[in-house]
Image (cartoon, rainbow, N blue to C red; front, top):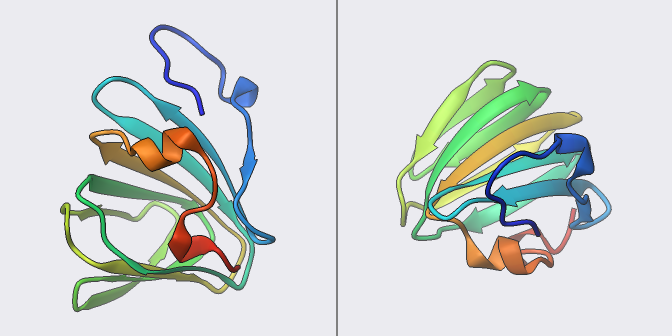
Length: 121
């Protein structure tokens, strides 16, 4: 996945199919990363944690989201911040588009391939 300095077009970034329900585009700089997700109804990001801070911005659809012990149904326009090391999980009852920002960048996303918690839709 691209690590960039300078300009690019979102349309030019490669799409990566994670499973039958989840597709992403990844862009990283030296200090941060942005990920555009397209997730079909029935998608699931199983419970996981990582050391990176994560900011979530819902573009469309719905995500039933858990951060630690707190649950919330997120819709377009909603945002959330997940501190590094906090377990979280998302269920997608309808087609959804969401943007995540990670700091620092996730090397596993730069390397490509499906995260273990997204092996199944």
